[in-house]
Length: 244
Image (cartoon, rainbow, N blue to C red; front, side, top):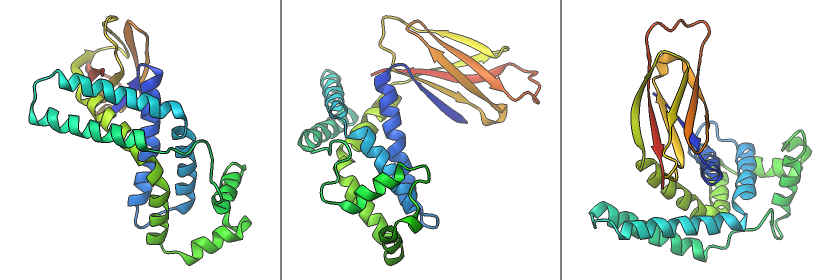
C-alpha cells in the first residue's frame, strides 16, 4: 500500500514540508554505511531556511493551545491525559526556545563558508574548500553525527511540535473505501468543516498514483495509470479526510 497526503490549506502544506525536511535529516543520521556529511549540511541549511521564521513558532504555539483546550473538554482517558501532558511540555519548550533567525551563524566562519558554497551551482565541493576536506578526513562518522545533533538542538522544539501535531491530525482521519471504473473521481467535502488533509491509500499492485486538486467543496482525483496496463476491473482505494 502507498499512502499519499495532500494538504487542503497552506498551513498544513507548510507543516508537511517541515516534517519531511526533518525526516531527511533523521534518515541520514540513522544511516551507518552511506552517511553523507554533504547531504546533512544541505539539509541543515534547508531546516534553517524553513524553521527560523518567527511566524512558524507562533503558529505552532497557537495550534498546540487549540488542541490542548480541545482535549480538556473531552473525556479524561489515559490516552487523552498523556497527549495533553505532551502538548503542555512542548508548548513550554517552544515558548522558551530561542530559534535562530535566518542564516545567523554568529562567529562560526566554517558554517558561514559552507552555506555560501552550498548556494553555488556546484554545491559543497571538498576540493574547493580545504578546511572542509580536513574536517572530513580528521573526524569519524560518530563525531560528525554528534556535530549535527548539537547543531539541531536549537530546532528540536519545532520538530517535536510538528511531529505531535501531524500525528494528532492523522489520527483524526475519517476514511472511506472508493471503487471506480474511471480514472476521474470527485469526492464532495462538507464546506462547513475546516478540512485540513486528504489521505489516499492505493494498493501498490494497481501501478497507479493520484494527481489531486481540491477546493472548499470537493476533492478531485485523477488516477494516472501506466499506459501499458489494461484496467479490466474497478479500481479500489481508500480516501480519508482529516481535520484538527
